[in-house]
Image (cartoon, rainbow, N blue to C red; front, side, top):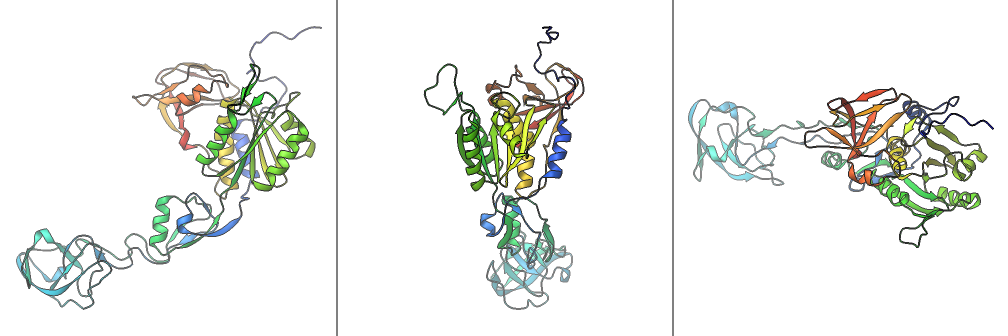
Length: 416
């Protein structure tokens, strides 16, 4: 037997095999996936984090009428010139929820409180602090700017104005605007249910007795938490040993109660990679050898209407692949747009000479000068690097020589 030349580099891409670039893999996801979460009508108070299934417009202008921006006195601004002005004061007042029900005659004023509707016959409010006040009259210095200290009807948004399009993910501030403009019920996609299952006979439940050759399940709690942070409903599907029949049953059960499933481990082509093998048997597997570090194997398939993401078993690789691939894909399945990571350019605070061939994601954080520092090791088993970091530095597919000060892409974890 003649052995091959020693390379001693497990990250070298073997010749003769197509390794899908990251951007190509994302484009395939973008054009393959479509919303699967069912639609429902929900109250605006229950819609945070959900994706709109139809566009929404204002049902009423905001504000619905002109109103006072301060406490003071309402009058017709154009009726008063320069210098000291003395104005008769009407009895009563305009207050929020209790409008002044009469027409204010020209040359007169009426007491008004912040937020109250501006009465008919007036268009301007003079501040209380700018007035001398008696029981039946006020005095102030003119001239007044017409419309001062008031909010115009519809100055925020007008009636019938389109607010949000289909696929928009609702935020707390969006709910405020929707409620203020008369929207109480919304048609949305219900929250996407995402299951997580760990595989591997060497894996044990956290806290269980584990031999030296066994490991505690770090991926499942991490992935369940990632799903919750992404705004989806996590479903714990437990752990399955390296047994194809058990894995098949677990996926069957999971597909009944979830829209998508993340598996960790078993997605490559080894003897015990039962996830990819099982999915291959059904003919629904898209097994991509992706040119990414950390990562590489990513299985994508459908299983009884549930979309399966087969992630790598190493925790760092599973974490990164969830952010880069699963996060935008799940957003699309949930009813939103396929939105990828959002990065900023910052100076590097490290040195690295990168070979061409793969996209690399380095665990990183920003220092006090706004520069990106990277974790001391790139090993996919170094979970401590995830806790040390606040985001990732993304290095391009081609070769690059990074030195301190070199601009690099930095993506905070919450920007995925």
